Length: 116
Image (cartoon, rainbow, N blue to C red):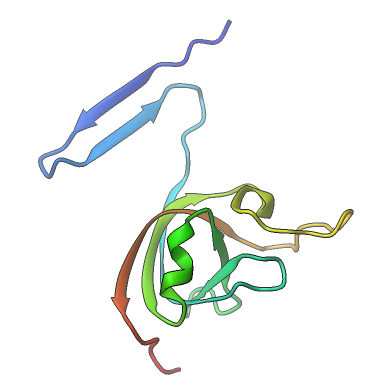
């Protein structure tokens, strides 16, 4: 029988960190860039210099309010596009090197995207 232990720690700024002692820790991430979409697969895309082809993002209903904005998205890396609501044709495989972020927080940086 596997036991799951949850610890909650409060930091000086009042931030909460949750650690799950299950052998796997979620991979938290943040990405800054220009938000567009939805694409043909029904998810949004954020692009920047590090990800010129974009990172597919989803899982947050507020994303549509930030199209064309420069934003910082915070969330967890997803194992597949299905985890963020991506619609794929039956039998279609994930593209090699494709990244997916399940968004938990959106911070608007600017109402405009920086020019290239």
